[in-house]
Image (tube, rainbow, N blue to C red; front, side, top):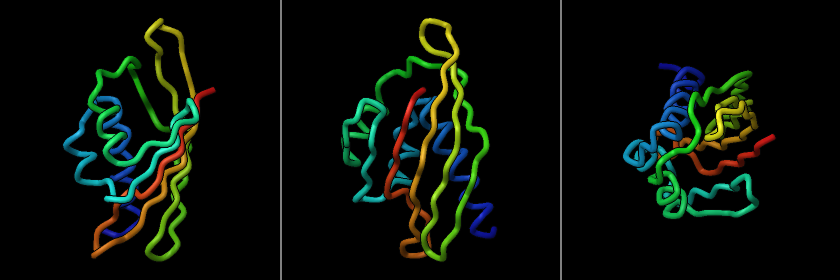
Length: 117
């Protein structure tokens, strides 16, 4: 599988793992030094992200749109738009930027930034 296809698959896994609270999958794809900027402005490390991911998800129907994978050698940036249904049944949207690095032959997420509109 080429790098672009691998990153697209990892992006799908990431979105699915958010929706399903799949801590196990995140444990496989997050770098040890992973950091995430949350929509509320907080910055969490890998352990904090896994802890918040384990909580039941309050949104449904999370989907990524307009996914743009920018490959730069052993480094990649993924930008995308999201849509979902909030706990009150109202539609929501946002954007995310994920940064990936190839380490020891495998792509791992090193950073994420999430916004909600």
